[in-house]
Image (cartoon, rainbow, N blue to C red; front, side):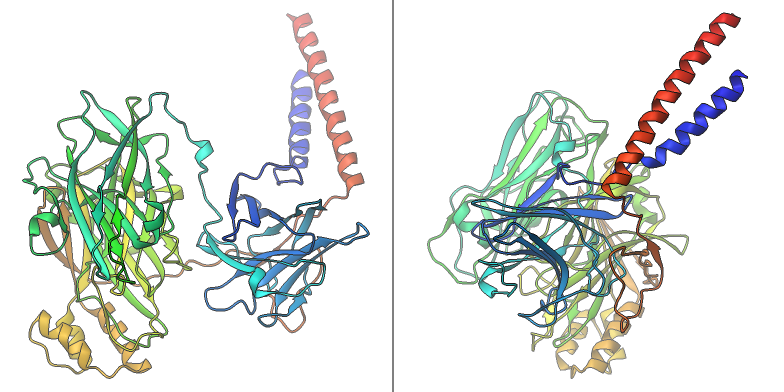
Length: 618
């Protein structure tokens, strides 16, 4: 009988469990926040649930009129979705899921996929809180993805729903951040160290790469750097394109002073193992609790190369700068020493992008089979936990894909809506294991419709790059693994003569670029044999070759069917959808709460009786 009662108790618990919900409600704390406009009139809070694929927003606007929040794309607001709401003078609220039919006109969606959680107005603010699926089945709703999302926000001075461009804003945000800084531990013994260039006169050139060599903190025992952040002079912030910190091998002979990183003195380009990096739009970054940059042991680097890329397109004279990177370190050691692996297309003019291209793909291959040989010691499996993507102004999307034994395993990281002005270190939702022998492919997507001349790979912002930095542990000596295609083969495929790489690059200027020749060049670059360059912290270089594998696109997940309307008849329902969990009315929720309480009380009484019976038998 005791066994029967235990079984019933477990069954009761199992039945009660589904009644509990983790969905964010009207009063749940929303962990993330951002101002959406330069004047800080619009403030957004948000949070999300990966399991239910629901995201909740709270928009606070200094207005007594309507407010709106939605998602748009890079090129136009037409077709954007916008959830609007407000409070009428009589106290009644209005709320609707809409979309833009042109730049100024809103139209209500036939499918209402946003759920109102709260709408209030006081003397200062109108506040609207709502939730929506990551992906609804309404074609008028743009998806919330793990890519950069261009958030559209608007408001009015009264309750007339009319868009005013002066009160309409677009801000790129990485909404689905896996880790919030508040979730990470802060050591008790935090020490701060600044790596910076002091009072540097920025040249009046469009592009300057300034480099200097600086010591890392001097400590008597092992410590871990666990966080870094940019240190920017406010009025110069828009002139700083990126800041990189490279670890130097301890056998390196380093120059003094500040000079052009890639100029006449090659010594200023020494040290190629990135340990931290910042680019436009990025903020501070704290490593996961179990990893850090090791300093203070004989195997750790003692010096770094600080590289700051300045873009002085207005050729302003007399501007001094003291930018750099601030690192936080501690004696409270983490479990793993971390490293950074640089992947992508080797940055030099063999990398080309034709003018007038609606779309052009570039590829950089990494083959890890020689890692152990060049590392000088066995290389354990690499555990990747974060990444930083980097192209210049023509970049539209990037991804890194992993292959093993000729078979595609997974996409490590990607951003199909890349924004040059939002380059930040991001965490992966789960750690990715890379084994020796795996192949890693970086694909970069460019668009050059606004250009009438060739774009070549290079350091300037008007040149291009195709780079992905993988943050991983445990650390090894490999600093970069990048590829480039046989440019002579590419030139021949385009009908041009070339006997060496220089002639191959020059031949690209002779091609008449049409949509057909652009696609032909893209195909030739993908089919050409790749040279793969592997480099270590001690500047040891090893080359190998390989071929670009095909990329199998990751299928989109199912959409979430609305419970508040149907998709318009003229629109095709997306393939694959799942029903939205039935919304509970307040009375139903109360009934379920009472049932759950009764079930708990019954379980408690049953367990007490069962224990008494067992004690009597003993």
